[in-house]
Image 1 (cartoon, rainbow, N blue to C red):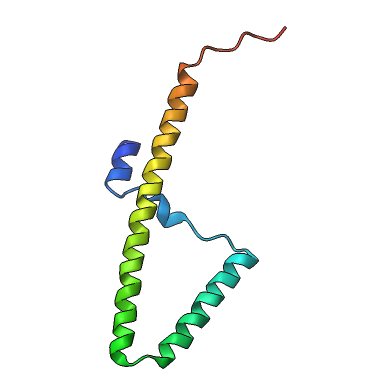
Image 2: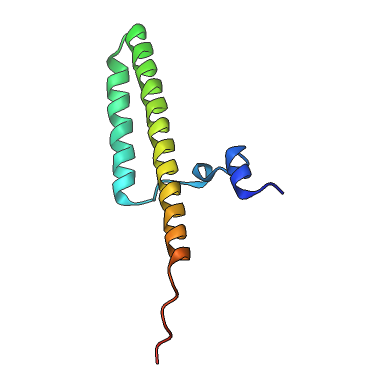
Length: 96
């Protein structure tokens, strides 16, 4: 069994694969709004415009993936620093 850090690095352990958006009225409304806007726009586009829209959405998706990757890395670093800080602290004296 690889170490945890090796499993993350090699993609064996991929936390993002197990994340689902919360099923709340807000997320359902946001998804519905997004789909309706996309469908309304797509119906009015020429084939060339539709291809440009898809290219734009692909680029945006790639950008968002990079932002999420950075956010994960920063969160991981922060968690490591927190663990280090906790481990360096002197134990509190026992309460009497």
